[in-house]
Length: 137
Image (tube, rainbow, N blue to C red; front, side):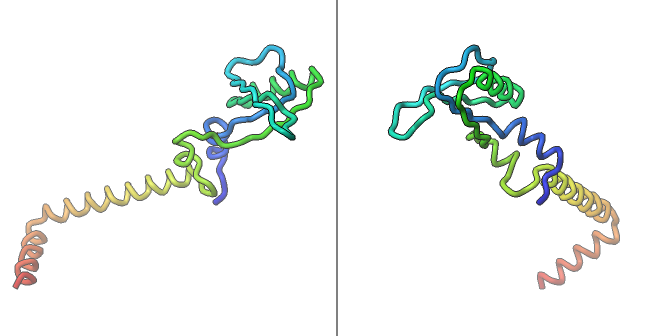
């Protein structure tokens, strides 16, 4: 299903995080940037792993790495949080899910209201009770 602007905003704000891999540590980091040193391994060229959840702070860090002349790579991935499958289901629209849920709840409430209004009618109630007695045998 097509993503709405609300879906894209939810994904950008709550789901995506930017992983930046660098050869050496950057200077001063923006607040909220998590840093991990990667253990040495054969064939691994990057030693520092930054995790940034804010797009603006990721841009600041990337610009700082560019100004320092460092070699780096970036990846945008989904967070590993428990709520990600609920607010950003793969291939589905969260906002349309909310719209259909509200529509379904509204239809249930309308049906319940109609049933209670019908049950308040004495003639209807007597005929339903007579029908139940006939069906019981």
